[in-house]
Length: 376
Image (cartoon, rainbow, N blue to C red):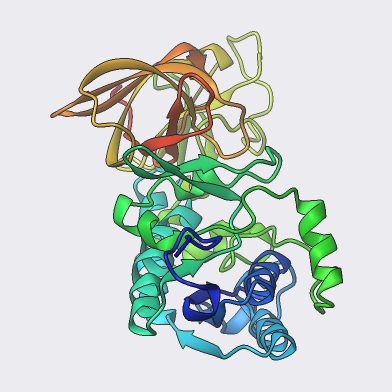
């Protein structure tokens, strides 16, 4: 028998696929496409954070309205739909980790943590328990079958590519995952939603972190870890006090706005940027833009899904989800992974992810990790 469109050796009607339905247009179209192709589709929505200020919040991925939207789409498609309460594990795996990172003076990326734990670990296990052959999501990435097995590639639409957030996907998970929208631009996804007459066709994309109302992450961290908002000094690179802050959680490396330093004696008053955070002393260290450039970073908690090549070799990388790929070289060794940039990288923040792509095309995700704190 020929393999079906999901690269599974079964007829679509004999292939059960669990679709992670967030209530947004992307996951809804994913479910509709697979149902239209004849697959045995089961929709699953995760209740991650649905209390207090998050209830009904526009632009959030996990609010109560989103669960209702997912249920309505499932009814429209005539597929089973389950809502799973993952709130406690989301709190411990994502929210607590998010707050702890800020306490350490880091800048976390909670969507990566959510994909690595609650979604691609716990939900994937549930999908297997439901007898599924695959777990499909609405992410804009591509799963490409290579000589050594499935590979993770950037989405075809550069403006929608979400590979940065999925570098933590393991080889075993990639065997089971499918991304039907990876070759589509967002405009075509919207058009498909209208064709399938889905009520979410015009629903705006989520913008905020789902558990951070109005982007005010500092108030969330304050609630979870009050010590992160204790005041302290803003100092220059020589240790001179130049101002005060109301909690290091409100700052990230590379930040310029919000320092409120005013005029300073004995200086030419050039703009200052956050160069480093010192959580132990509750200090924010500032300096000129030239002090932000880094030529080398070390990574921890690395996930590698590229060829097992030891030594140093050229790659392309990004240290923020929205930036263009940068040429670099990576060193894989027993002591860890080191990335060396071809040109100094400005505003590299500890705790953020550095994702590594192949040097030739920048399409294939080779792996990545989180940026270690810099030594003084």
